[in-house]
Image (cartoon, rainbow, N blue to C red; front, side):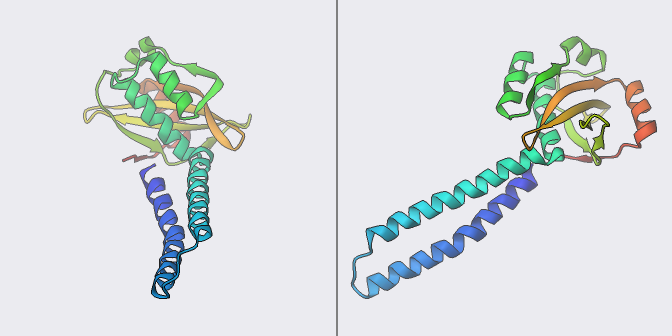
Length: 194
């Protein structure tokens, strides 16, 4: 997510900078010629600037919804807030909806299942699986790893694509034994998320 934000900020700067330089040069030219800077140019500068910002932001929102690893990272970060006690179940569902990750049929894991899997209320470092595991029914799965500096805990997120964005069908926790079964089949590798 942080890398995507940096990339889109840089894209915005590289798009806006030439436009700004052009308008500053035009303004200086008008000022040197002792002419009044036309109101139409000011309005066009503002309108084109707003369109540029909207286009970059819209493309950013599309990308973080369309790229499954970015959607998994966002879902994992919200779930991490639930694990550290910042969000209760209702708050978790509301936050998933605010992030546009909640599907209509999203199943929410209970607090008892989270405790049974070995999670405690503390901060975790999130890592996501390097690969996306596509299912036969058109859905996809990604694995998340939570590191509390003593143990690794795991969860699995099932996604479905809806209108060019990925939404969570189910985010379930895995016991170490369940994860080992999945790992034997899929040889899962993780990379950390900042």
